[in-house]
Image (cartoon, rainbow, N blue to C red; front, side, top):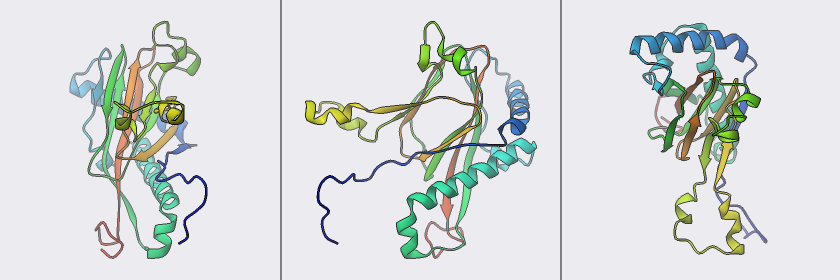
Amino acid sequence: MSTPQGVSWLWPTPLYTRTLLTADRMKPDLLALAARLREADGATADRAWASTDDLYLHREPRGLTELADAVRSGVADAAARVNQAAWAQARPAGLRVDLVGMWMQASNRYARHDVHNHGNCSWSGVYYVDVDPTERRTAHPDLGEANGMTRLHSPLLDRLGGAYMDLGAAWLQDSHVDLDPEPGLLVIWPSFLLHQVLPYDGDRDRVIVSFNATIHGPGGGPGFGF
């Protein structure tokens, strides 16, 4: 292949978003499930809470199984788009999306989640179940617009420390993207991407479902022929 002329962007990071049309139907089931699991754990509303990560094994309530199906569909769509060239050459058939982790989280009273990423999977993401309406959330007297945001960090973040910075490297300073926690929004990203949840405080708890997913061949292996 001939070398392209001009500027080429190498290895960009994909971000997949989809607003689920079934959000209103799923929401009561998901909130009731979160309340039931929190009560069983003895958790209170004034601290961060997370369920076990095996919710993808649950067969009820209906809203949870609907969400699991929507996550699998979204991961399949995202992976097909970014792997279009590679899959066209290999001509894979019978690929399947497996959820290997799915858990609920609720937070309030300035709870936060520090920078991290996820292992043992190729895709991760979040589904926003409930949070204060945007106008109320962003009007917080201390936290402002950052209240409860999900922050995605550039894969080049570790290159910024100690780096020589001048106007030629100004593009590197755009080192994060903040996502509004809009109920009904499904967001999917590569599992290596560092992310965090900024402090949240509101009238409603910030309730989400997080997940990890893998894509396998028809026999369950990581390659096309397995």
